[in-house]
Length: 487
Image (cartoon, rainbow, N blue to C red):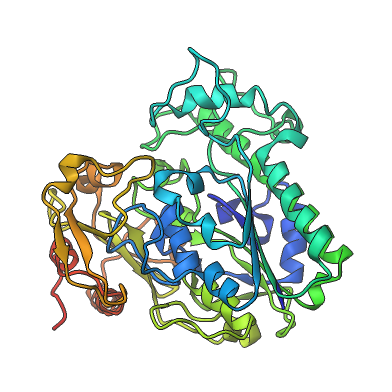
């Protein structure tokens, strides 16, 4: 048995022709759609990057209990489970967050891994006086890094796929392996080669704009279009490398015996709803509603779209099912093979959000976004044994009021630290801007007209409470959201 997961970061489904985009050049995504089952209702769970990857290991939501952080000692891990059952797991990635404080326990769960350097503000090349070790100063470091990424062959995305293809060349004839190829693109900054950018000309004459900020849009229409064009150019480069992987599956006849998943962690806002990026705004479909493609040779179904709801937490269960392995008791995700076979639903609804932000629920047609009940957005606690943020440890001031909390249902009998959340974050700073809203995606796919429907709202609140309870939400989350705590 063999499996490949090809993962892109921040891939907006609205920029893919197989999801209806008429202008982005991505023929290999079209080719992929003909060889796989295409999911029309795939959603994120825990946001953003590393919380989503924690779900890819554990198969359960984590945003109700802590912010961005490492895998915990009590966490189940998909590649670790596979390794324990004699399956070699290899990670090829240029995603720099794996090698920061908040991601440092992920790659060790694989049998082997390849680390490609140079994306975003990766502290890679040293130019004294031009770069700084400050965590927030990503742009100066990125300007230095780009001086070493002068051809497509040297781009981290290209080198990451090279690593994956080298694994396939060496091991395609072997059995019992899982290959995870993961590229940071098309995450910002949207840096790519000029021949891709030339495919998307525009009339903008100002400084190039390939790194949108995390805030509302105040740029001109021409500048917004330049950012969209730069993103499209990077998607086209992703499409080229997807084609290289598809060619390898053809060349080595891996379609006969290999599970193949193409996915992303979340989407990206490119001026829709007057917002840039992710995390700081409500999670509209451009961020939360994601592309997903799966080929399962045992099912043998391809070139079709399915409507049943799926989430990131379902992917590890799907891989375990493919290898004939049981899911651990703490895994909330469900194998997607029934959806692949005949669009049989595996879940009634899906919960998604970010620590300290809105808590959202969808049943595939309606999306309900529940905002904090007060501007203070309290109470809120981190539950962890690994007190780190994205690029730093928790500060001493954050830890002074921590207490030892009794084991949570999924911590395997281990007490955890309960740490009052004091550190200001972008998510918390915009909480006053958030509203509780309900959308009907069937009649309002762009989420432009909030729905006033008390009956549907009550039903969605019921689903929200049911899923929060199933995911062992701590009591203060109900209080923060102004919801009754189930008995």
